[in-house]
Image (cartoon, rainbow, N blue to C red; front, side):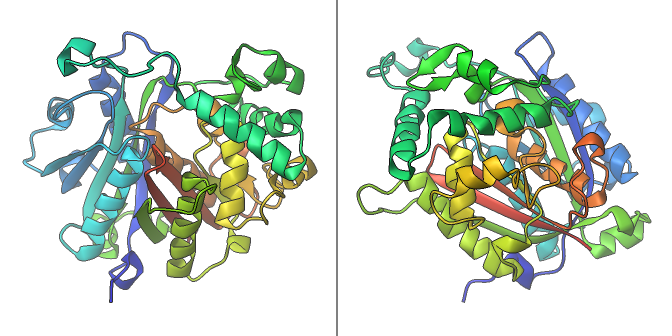
Length: 380
């Protein structure tokens, strides 16, 4: 029988840090990454030599980018693994760091995500992309928005309220790429990218970094860390897509499968969730995913949204960081940044974004629809 993270020794997040997500610019990726790692070390109150292993997530930068970045912290000889898994790269790195600590191989491990745009030149592949200008992610999600609206009898305006909520949350987040509140009229009146989708309903892809340090109970004791600020990793599940019946959204069904396994592993239900950070690259995704995580029945997400149940202070704060729509989606760091936001919330350190009484959080990421990673965090 397969074992889960819950079957191994407990793992705790002891340090988190960011380089703020931002529009693409001249900042070297090394500066982005080292800034986030140093912030996580300071948050954990440990020095770099205490870190025994590092997992570096990136989707855009190329080969072995961790080596020239981590050497600025000191050449300690620790093993370094580089991970690329599309939008789920950071989530994958975090899971691997957790598995290493849970297994007893290490007591302290780092997961860091960092990215900058580094487009692959066409001549390096030798072939042109087919229908390059006709097929894009936003076209797919525009069609998905239409399908959701018609199936459940809701309006495009209702779906756009996801962006209003998340821009409002992002405006309170100093690490977010977009830090401005937007009215519904502003969201709907922005640049149209496909069908009913406007730019303010879609994630920006910028640059930045996020880091998380995980430790065992032995590591926490040995290093004299503040156990009251340590957040338990109660569940960690990863799945890839299968062949689904025609007409089913593969990323939504994959999310349902993965969430079910994660909740079972942590022995909780979706009703127990106080915080959800999820992959809302487009507004309709948030509705699809909360329904498939089990927060409400299919087609009821808009009703929760309009009631304020998904707001900070509501039934369950969904994307209190601002989500991908406002926090941003620099790819490599995104999944690690979600973990950091939930840790802030469960510690009670989220400031103006604080969801009162938060004790359990779920982080969800999909990678090009083909993989799904879900982590469950709990306050001890």
